[in-house]
Length: 294
Image (cartoon, rainbow, N blue to C red; front, side, top):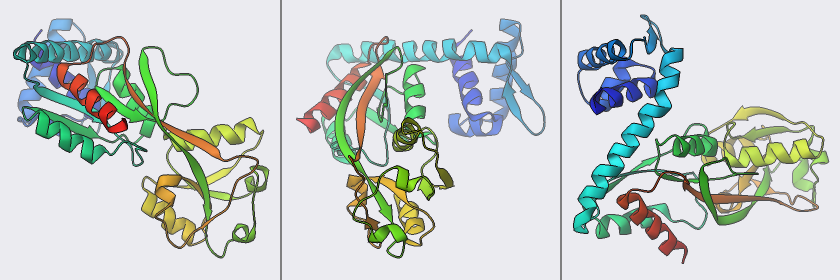
């Protein structure tokens, strides 16, 4: 079994497409298909169900995926440790980030990291499932570290430190009935329609838990993945929404309504694996983030 075969297997498993996997790997699709067939013959089981319309992991493929990712991560760490023996930081760091990163100025951090470590590179990624996606990626080795909103108890195997806290601000359109209110409670919002972010995003999780904790339900007919669209929909009176204070500060055409008895407090954490050591390049990036916070 070769590392190349495992990398092809992981790419197909994550993309659920031989075409997209070959594009990601920058090799011809036939080479990916041949490597997967050879791997299936070696392990004695089919790893994918595939037909002309879909690709899906089999039970054997699901069982193999965590180990394959861990093996590739260990191989990368070993190679980077060897190259780092000379004192020069090399390798690629995969980092997850958010639309709002609080006190961490990500572009500035990456610029400083690049100047200090020109032989290292950072692969910056967003997840469609927000913070929840980042946490899963860190735990299974697809990401080295990430900025994520971790609500409640952190999963086993995850190291995290809160690096920023800010309020979520309730926004509505200027013609909305709530715009004339001096303050509102969660109970006042139970019948409202919400513009919110996808399940898994940290701010969405925080609001959902606040309503559930108060014994309330709410309607979220409009889900978006960026603040500009959220602002536009709220401005048009299509719903109200909670947005981190740092993002809300620059929004025109919307009205902020204070939430009582206290605002919802949103936090951003820096997360990485608590069981796998960081590569030298990832450790160097972690130091740059800490320097930014200091």
